[in-house]
Amino acid sequence: MGLLDLLFGRRPLDPSALRERLFDAAAAGDRGVLQRLCSEHQAAICDAFAAWARVPPEVRTEPAALQRYANGLIAVAATLDALGVSGPLASLQGGDDPLAAWREALGRARALRAELRFAEAASGLEEALIDHRDVRGTAVDELMAVSLGALGELRMQQGRPEDAEEPTRRALALCEAQGDLEGVRAYLSNLYEVHRWLGRRVEAADCAERLAGALAQAGAPDGPWFEVQARIVRTGEPPNRVVFDLPDGRRFEVEDAPPQATSLRCVFQRDRLRLLASEVWTGRGEELGGRERYEEALEAFEEARRADPHDPHPHYQAGVTLLHLERPFEAVARYQAAEERAPGWFHVRANLWLAERLAAGAIDQETFLLLRRLEEGAAPEQVLTDLPPALEAHPDVARLHLLHGTALRRLERTADAIAALRRGLAVQDGDLDVRTRALAELGTLTPDAGERRAVLEEAAAVAGNLVAAAMARFALRAGDG
Image 1 (cartoon, rainbow, N blue to C red):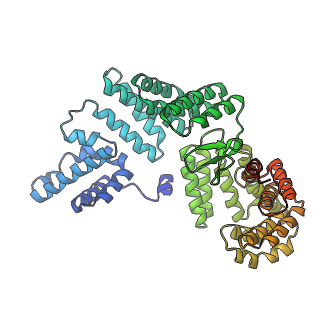
Image 2 (tube, helix red, strand yellow):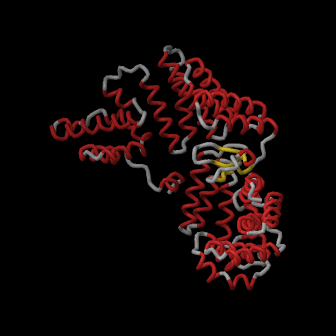
């Protein structure tokens, strides 16, 4: 099975078999199935549609079969048109749209993008742009802007930001000339990401300022966010940090979040966007790992790493997978790679600490598996039942004490939880991620105002875990310390 088969869990359908499945759905009036098939197989349908439009001789002689064939062909073309692929329908209507081939190329590029075939999609768009370079008109300018913007985004997804800049700039200029404010915002955002990826701080900050103005003009909630980003990027953006999202769509740096906010979601903010292929492959690897197909999961994470060498997440998830395979030395290398790319990414520091102890033989595989099981949603009663033997065997592992304290807190045994957290903080095992989390947890529980401020300040200063440190900083600002 090939890589795309691994990703999508299916083999490409033969064109004739695909046509029959589509026509069967049309004949049955099953629009849901028809839409799903057209969405999943856009590229293949577009490739085969011209051949399908030539009705087979054996069908022409059978009135019922001919009617089914014609109805199926029209239904497929109409469904594709609703999905933004107008070429097949235009061809059935006599080809009176002079831009039909161009629209078809754009629709095909979108279909190929969904299949992560970025180079093929970009090549088709480049050909369409060359073929129509001498065509003029308002409709042409609109299609030109969309095509250039799509080409820039495809090159970016290929990991070629230096080649994405020129078409993105041209798309932006066309939208500005047409007064297309939505297009201006979209391509300013894309250009901003291009400059961030290339480490061009001044150019990225300029784009952020322009984008803030365009968003403010539209009354969008994220205009102030980009004003702040312009300042941060211009002075030097850290590779990874935590910011807050609010339910109303606004995003804030920790220091700027409204102190009275009660529903905050922590989000990691890196200094460059994550490429789609890495995201898809990593998701596939996580799915395989969840089914304990660890070797296949590693293959998927390797595909993700190749697609986006800067993404920390495939390294992070590969580390977890390697620990399940009892390969801690390799896991250490993967966690170190994740930390290099995005310091403080999720629990990378705690997991690196754990992998190093496993490699040194200071912690056994059974304890690792117990930690994984209890940390992944086990009921607090189950934690309190299963944890004591591990605590007795490893009283010097702060992570076990944190897990104990968290379970007690969930059962509203506050005094016992505080005692467990204090025992964990008394352990000096060097796991700063766990220490930050234990300090922040204790800060939410202790009734002693002096202790609360002291532990929150230490959590913010240690910052071994970025989420816990951010919440501690927010609590201090909000007056909880």
